[in-house]
Length: 397
Image (cartoon, rainbow, N blue to C red; front, side, top):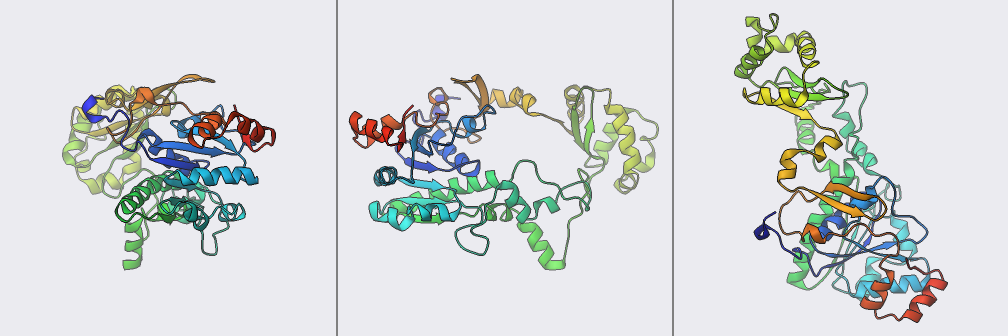
């Protein structure tokens, strides 16, 4: 990364965010803010572990300070209100009743800090017949109808496998909070934002809604196949679970492809026409699969690409970490974690404006920065901290 494209402190330096989020959508949003230099204070329940062996929380909670705080205790709630008075953003993704039961609503917080921006990210929003239902990213994508758009046949809808609703909602939160900050800079006032996890993926399916409302169109579920190109799909290559994807988009690509394969059946003149290839797609796929089965995925990818054929290796996670293009662009970051050693994580997809990767901090466990936050930010004494620890209000690590 060139020095010219990177802000040493990050473009969001000086911004303070109170992070009450869990699982994926909310932590992703605050992690992005932390990567760009914001001061993230993660509020964790001392009774709930944060660090786990799979590294998920480590990825989502880097560049955050952590305070172990019991919000259900009066003193713990008061500490949170004090933090609110010196913060810019509060973000949470509990079920709606949680914040109401704690009496930590936007109306309460705005009286303490009228400039505060609060974002709630419950599964179905704060209002409506589903509002009290819990939800995860898989719930959100199902409600949006995404499983009905993918799969190998119409009889069995398939989940995306990546809980699509979570990352989309997290990115939506990043964008709308920046908008709210700009509004505050102009007007001087904060605001409350309600992001329903289940609504976010639905907003990315506009063309299907429009098509169905216009003429009743329903998409065809056909796995990796295409209505417009053939052959089109993923094919197994040499090795364990190694695959390559190809897309023959025109007659020129098909001719180049058949010259490489040199298969008598596929060289038939009729197959120069897309409609004929589509009609005999299963037969063509069988011959292509036989040819690919003995090939190395990466080697044959370059061979096809050099002839102008759209082809790409279907990388697994480990292969992605060593991808030469992403590494040349300095996409990944290696972090030396106290419990796990050096682990490689995804960095930021938008280059520049985040703080130096050398200054990125690994995920803190519950309570690692409790004393720092209380004493340096709020002016508590050592005796105060000792009392809070004895009472079980704050965890110090």
